[in-house]
Amino acid sequence: MDIILVQIYIDDIIFSSTKQELIDEFEQVTKDEFEMRKLGLLHYFLGLQVEHTHNVNFLHQAKYVNDILTRFSMTQEHPTTTPLAVNHGILLECEGDPIDPSYYRTIIMYLNTSKPDIMFATCLCARYQINPNSVYLTDAKRILCYLLHAPNLCIWYSNDQKFDLISYNDSDYAGCKINNKSTRRMPVSR
Image 1 (cartoon, rainbow, N blue to C red):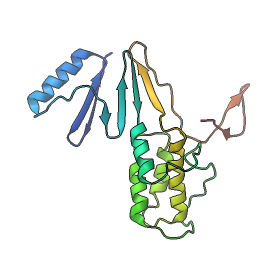
Image 2 (cartoon, helix red, strand yellow):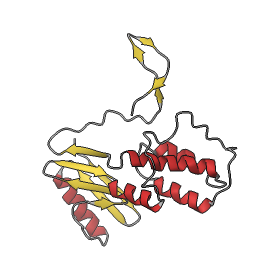
Image 3 (tube, rainbow, N blue to C red):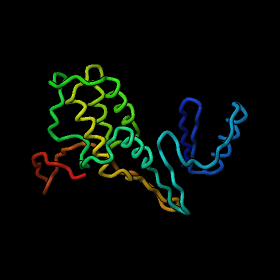
């Protein structure tokens, strides 16, 4: 079964397919209906970089991550291996010194990207944009320190091999079974 994938963002459109004929047909139908120009093979879109080699494609956000870290003066901080502490204790009533809400919102806005590994932590921090304080800012900056840990993480896929994403898990704890017996919840290595 062949598929075509289409992503539209305001006035930009990206499309791809498992079959070149579907790409050509979709392009023609779209050109007939709308004023459009073809920019060629995708290399950069909304912070997402795509690198094409002979048979392998790499998707990453190395430049975007570096730009974020530079913008918030975090390039010299110590990296951390998780975006959020396991027992983070982030609550609505956290006591802390008031901070500039626009600065905090800007960090959250830049972190709100397509990186699934930081999505939970970013959404948790985004809850506190109205009255942010130093505690929430520390948590948001921890996410930036996590990005320092592995800024060049990427997804790669081959044009020659079948690609099946089995699963993705963004949890700090998971139950496991050993010899068909449930065990206590334990940390999952990332």
